[in-house]
Figure 1: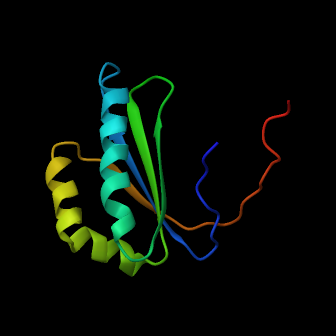
Figure 2: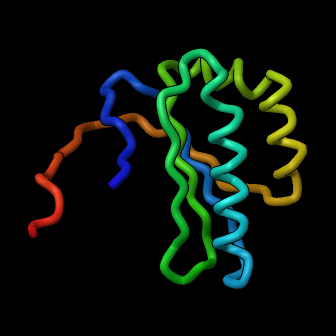
Length: 110
C-alpha cells in the first residue's frame, strides 16, 4: 500500500476534481502519469497520491511539498504552467492543509 508521508513540517495541497463516473478512472490515471513524470523534477516535492471516490464523481489529488515556496515555484515553472493549461477547464477545489497529527497502523492482518 502506498501512503503519503507524515512529515510534520510538510505542506500539503489537496485538489478535488469533479468527474463523470465514466471518465474518473481514465482521468485519474492521466493525472497520476502527469504527476509521476513532472513533479519529481522539482525541488521540495515530497509525494503525491491520487484517489477516485467510491461514486466515481471525484478525483482527489494530495501533493506534499517541503515548503509552500516549493509549491509556488512549481506552479510558476514550465511544468506547472503545462498542468494549469491541461486542467484549465476542470476548476478543482483547492485546499492547503496543515498536518495536526497522524496515527499509523500495522496494515492488513493476514
